[in-house]
Structures are given as structure tokens and as C-alpha cells.
Length: 234
Ligand SMILES: [Mg+2]
Image (cartoon, rainbow, N blue to C red; front, side):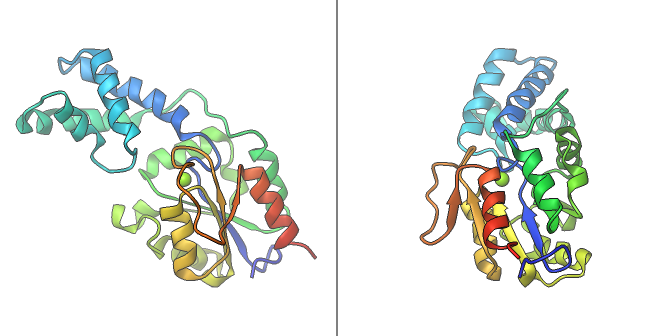
């Protein structure tokens, strides 16, 4: 159980749990659309099409292909344009990023009471850059980016990320508590391995209902307060 700095770990998701991923995506759309102009696309037309595709779900793995297809590109044109546009996306770095209100204070409060780890999916360089840009990296005793363990198939709810994180901290998987926004990732992972979870209902997937019995709050500070009151109380 999560109990003290030596007794367990609170495992925190990144995107849409600690900051609004939408704010990042708006910048990334601009960077990709800018690159698209050098390939002969109209900037605004491309940006509008990319935005529409992303609205259907930002982590499908083929959003740029889908955008090019929506713009009427042949499969050969998709093959040619995909590389530079994907590169523009993963190399995009916003000048500054901010956490949701109260997140920094809550991470600080948790880190004084328990081991704290970040478990996130996505491009490793990009996810690490986000942690640095948000100014939260130093709160975590361990960070695992699932894609580093073997690609997209290792993403949550695959338990390999949580297992790697537990090993790095010298803990059992059963000693974790998960906080995250995604029912199909964070909640599903917790349920698969049988550990407590708090679902933060915000961001792109906020309208997805929580399964019955899953603790659900409106933001990360509420989740942290719940952890401190219910799981770390001495
Ligand atoms: Mg998330």
C-alpha cells in the first residue's frame, strides 16, 4: 500500500492530468502547418484539416496520414509528405508551458509525503521536454515513458511501464496508486493490476464516464488531497 516515502508510490499521468494537452496541440498544429507550406499546402487549409482529424482523437498514431488523405493526397503523396510533417510535430517545442492551477503545489505536497513517479505514453524526447518545460521533472523519483520500452504496444494499459517503474524504485506493482485522466489507459491499467486509482476528469476525454466505483475528481489538486487524506493519513 501507499503509506510513506518508503512504503509505496503515487504514479501520475502527464497529458491532460497535469496540464491541458490542447494548449500543446494548438502550437504543434501551427508548426506542422508551417512545414506543410514548404510542401505546397496552404497553411490554413492544412491547419483546419489537421485540427479536424485531431478532434477525433489525438493518439491514434496516424493523424498526419489521415490529414493528408482528407486533403485528397494520393498514397504516394502521403508517403512523401509524412516524414517531414511527423518530424515537425515531434520536434515542436513550445516556448513555455504551464500546469493546470494548483498542480505544482500539489506535486510538492505529495513529494514530501510519498514516492512520486510519472508514467506517460508518447514520443520519449517530446514527453521529457514537456516535463522540463512544465517545471515538474524534479518532483518525480522515477519517470517511465512507455514508448521507450518497445514502442506503442507498451502504452497503457499494458502493465510493462508500471512494472518497469516499480522495479526502478525497488517496489512491487501492488504498492502503487495511479492518478490519471484516461479511463481506457490509466483506470484500465489500475484495474488490470488491481491497484487503487483516482480518475481526474478533464481534458480531451473528460466526457468519457468513469466506471462504477472509480474515485473521480475534477482536477489534480483534488486527487492529491484525496490521496493525502485517504491513503497517506498517519
Ligand atoms: Mg493523460
